[in-house]
Length: 116
Image (tube, rainbow, N blue to C red):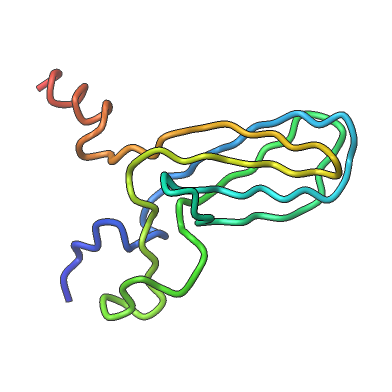
């Protein structure tokens, strides 16, 4: 079996999207991540405090494994591109945008090639 799992071997990576947000009241909160088409790719729910909160997304979308033939249980990472995050807590709705960047072709890869 090949060790080239590019995008599938989530436990061999530490790539994450960290989302920080402040709430004035504690409560049950839902964080929904939408792709460029507006489709929900990940939903994270939990209790939050009346303070600065942080949610870490491992870049694995919800749903069944995308390429189970590679390794049973293997999960594909989110594709590079723009994403929107929508945070709902009680009557409060917050939103923002971020971008998932391919580490081999994104800005960090450009810096690595310039230092060689």
